[in-house]
Length: 589
Image (cartoon, rainbow, N blue to C red; front, side, top):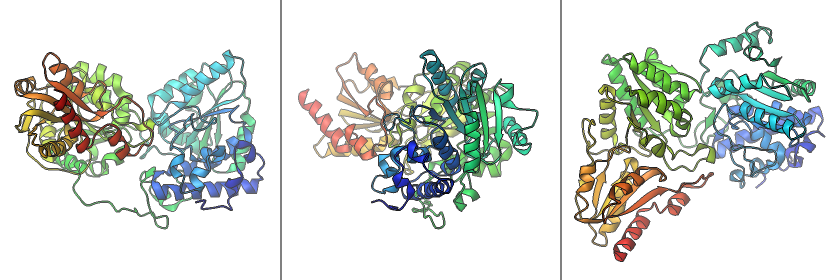
């Protein structure tokens, strides 16, 4: 249903229509865009603050430039909602029945005005430099524009991009959307210099961009569409790289977003009138709080801890640690690579770092995990959240962490199945001195149960139930799925052994070896991609035997906003499907 048939946006099928608008109509469209961003995010959730702040810049770009001949690259692309509305995709915002027809990030399969699937930060400048170089080598024409901001400049790759852009000698425009925020508050000395540039109207002597060899221009009011049009007209067709430093207001147009910029960077569904959640926060216990409570006890007992996040404190609710133990908290901004190596330095010199990493972002620091943390084998502790099969965008797939991390030497990747096991693992990780320890925070509701061990120097799998013929090994939060599958098999008289393997990276070969004599089928369950994952480790162990191994998890593929129930059905991850597959193998044997 088109909620606003009278909106001017209904008449905009592409950038050519934007160019026909009067200044008054541009203001009207800006208001419409903001209303639709709020309306859609209120219904299904999404990035709100970043999109509300970039509206005028986007309108000005499409008014001045000729997309897709002139190309715009969005950093992270979580601020590309206005761009989508102006490039033929307004239906995904006007029609509440089509909200899911437009993806939450840029997508070249969705529109000729997009060029990349981008959901991680700091990539736009490097992409734009590559596009500009290719344009020149192939004798093409057109402006290349990168839009970076919302904290993205703190990522090391952004600085690498600026450095290489500084040596480029052709047309390249970098729009730095400076809204004075990351996801949370910005951190680091660079941002003090950016403040000085804003306060001096771009005239401060310490200028990061000029130091990189780039031309520079400052715009004090990036939320004035006429000012932005004039600025872009002045640099259109420029023959060298330039940074347009644009001062904007994150969350502009919605009071709750202005009052709490961090909370409204991304928001779950809410009531428009007051910003309250459609589904109020549950007061049920959660794994985040269990972890924070244990860290608080450790700090108060005198343990020299440093809690570290790379700009995602809200994912774990770390504001509590920040407020109560500020000396033990550090947000390093959007710099996952730095966070890992920084933590290694802390660990070498007597402080126990506790890194909080979102699974989909942790892959950005893979080299540092291998070369700095694992190779040097210092006792860094890492909590990984949202490691699971996900219904999120293809840019935010979070099921690769098991394969990435469980295959790195020296790392113990623990997978607790319940609250008591999680606390025991964390307590051990904070006191042992042998190796880096990563703990995969379980997904879903908190469960309680027995502790597999109080020390994990030697991994000992927990045989929760001893059966015969079939053994089910459920890793971490998929242990519960194993219990449900075992219950399904029991309906047909199959008494399955049920095992909690404890670790994703170390197999208890003694326990597995005991299955060979009286088990025909071993089932592995992992809430992750199977390629290179836990199940393949088990499969390799049993390869020389007659035991048949069935692996269950995600296939090696990118999924883009596919409902979780559909994915579980596709991957045979329901208890009934697992039991049916097991029985089919037993019948053939």
